Length: 332
Image (cartoon, rainbow, N blue to C red):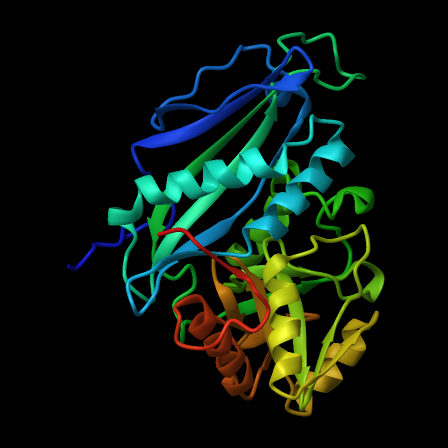
C-alpha cells in the first residue's frame, strides 16, 4: 500500500500524542490527547524564560515490513542531559521509551515506505504559571511527543551552499549542547542574512576561525580516508546522527579525528579535494556543494564519499544491512 508523504516536512501529525506531566514532585501516568492542540497556562515558565528542550528521532518501515526506531535511548539520554542543564525535571527513561513505542504503534499505518519515515518530536516544557520566576527553575513540567510522516529533509542532489561565519556565534557557548529552541532562534538572523545575501542554505559558525557547526546540523570534513570534526564540547550539539556517522565511517575503514581546526585549514582541505557533510536526524547526511568564505564561493569537488556513508546508515535503518551496533528498537 502506497502511503503519501506530506509536501512540507513536519507539517502533518498523527492525530494523538502522549502527554506526561511532572507535578507534586513526580512524573504522572501517560495520558493521550489530540495532537492539534495543547493547553498550558499563559504564564508558563517555558513561554517567558525559555525552559524548554526537544528531541528529534525517526521510526522506519523496513524492507520486510517491520517497524523500528533508530537509537531512541540515545535521544532520551540527550534530553535528560538538556533537562539537567536547564534545571527541568528529568524524564524517566522507561516511561519515555514506552510512550515512544506506543505512539509508533498507533501511527504505524501512517509510516511511509523508504526513503521516507516517521519523524518523532518529544518536547519538554516548564509549566510553572509564575512570571516572577525569572531567576528560578520551573518545578512542574510537561513532556509530549508528536509523530509526523516525512520525506527527505534535504533531497539528495540539491545544492547545499554554506556561508562561513567567523564573527558571530550560533548561541551562548555554555548552552550549545542543549537542544533547545533558543539556540535555533539565536542563529536565525545570520541564517536569514546568508540566504538573502549569498543564496546559502545554512551558516557554518566559526567564531574566531574555530570551525564548529551550522545553525541546524553538525559538520564533518571527509579528507580522503579521514573524517575530521570538532571534539565534543559544550559549544555545540552532541548529535546522535553525528555519532552514528563517525561509527559507521570507522566500520567502512575511515580514520576518525576529533580535533579543533580552523577556517584556513578547512579552505585548504576543500581546495585539495576534501568533501564536507552536514549531519542530523532530519537529513541524515547532506553533502555540502560549496562554501562562501570571505565573499568568495569555493566549490566542493565531490559528494561521493558522503553519499556512500549516508547509504550505509539508511541501509541499517531500512533493514537492508546488519545492525551491528544494536541501534534499532523493533516496535511491531
